[in-house]
Amino acid sequence: MVGGSAANFALAATALFDEVVAVAAVGGDAVGEVIRAQLEHRGVRARLAVKPNLPSAVAIYVRDEAEHRAKGARLLLVGEPAALGQWDTGDAEALRSELADTDVLVVDGYALRAEPRRAGTLTLMAQAHDSGAEVVYDIVPHDVFRSTGIAEVRRYGRSATIIVAEARTLNALAGEDWTDADTGEQAAHRAATFGARTFPGRRLHVRFGLGNADRTLTLSPNGDVEIKATGYAESDEPRGFGDRLLAFELATLLKDRRT
Image (cartoon, rainbow, N blue to C red; front, side, top):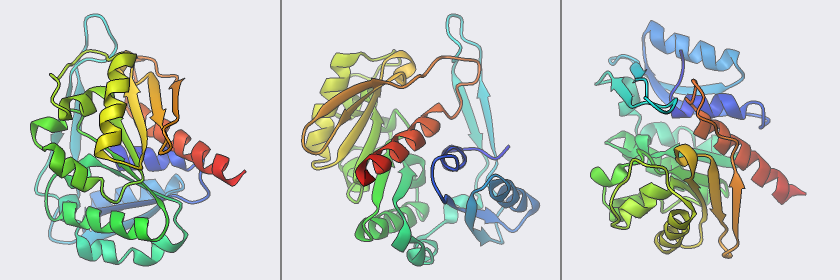
């Protein structure tokens, strides 16, 4: 199965955008060809840099059963070294011509965890911002505070125009105790206040509620606040909901701006 945040978002976006491009790196192997073929078969143009001396990234995703909820604990096993982690500034520069007609670039925090992929991703974000595109920084992993301080998270969001995060993620970065529980509306407002100070002038999408996903507090750069239900439910297949939600939100935002 071709998956992960980038693929999940790209596949969801094909129903909402005229053209969707997935950016990544694969090895010069059969797995890389399968990834490319599956993306393009489903309507995604795959700009995949090839790293011939490394294997394509393969992950094993396991979720156990929970006693009271559909979502149990998640375990993600990723094989390394892999081609994806070697996507670099040269690969970003090769995409510069793509950005002239780009409406939005979506990046999540997993692309920023290590070099050289981090430098390549930040380069692409800066280029997209300079071209006039919306640049989305989805702050993950949700417990990013365990490995990355707020100064670095702020640096990663420097070129972003839209910040997406769970309320508990922003509050933990602000110094509050981490919680595995669902967060409520008060926590979302605290998170939005902190997010506005940390990323001034950006649009914020703060997730909270059931599963930390069934409601979103949106804070616009001019200070307007809106809270909406997302339609989230803890079904037996929770994978990829956040990516589908973000694709819908961005398509709606861009459509509203054009009308």
